[in-house]
Image (cartoon, rainbow, N blue to C red; front, side):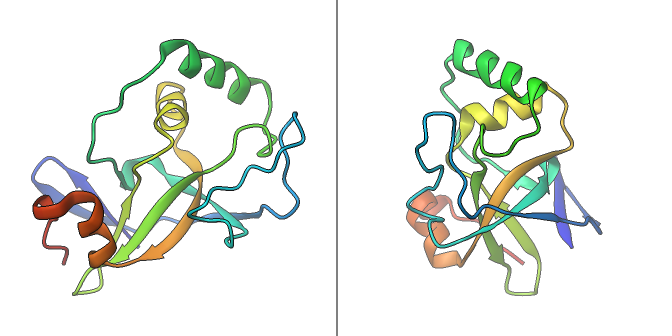
Length: 142
């Protein structure tokens, strides 16, 4: 179950996640596409774009975004464009919240291509971890 935010309204939608295994994934340069935050996580989920909360405005290199868009259009091979990391936080009343702080160029590329989902590694987290990123701006998650 994803909690979808649209302005001041909160909508609940049942959305399925599709999983892929990322074991032994390398890019065209032969380097491993793992992040320090999700190094031990193998599963990759196609997370609906609409449920991901990105609290900070990105600073984008337009050429990088365009290059990623071209690559995404050319191939469905997940090893070419690695998944983003998404913090998955359970609210105190059971709501699911999905925060992403990195992967801004990949997120922008999928968004501009009007893709409904983005490959992501879900990192189980908590409100304390979120407070590390957001400080006093951390919302009261239900």
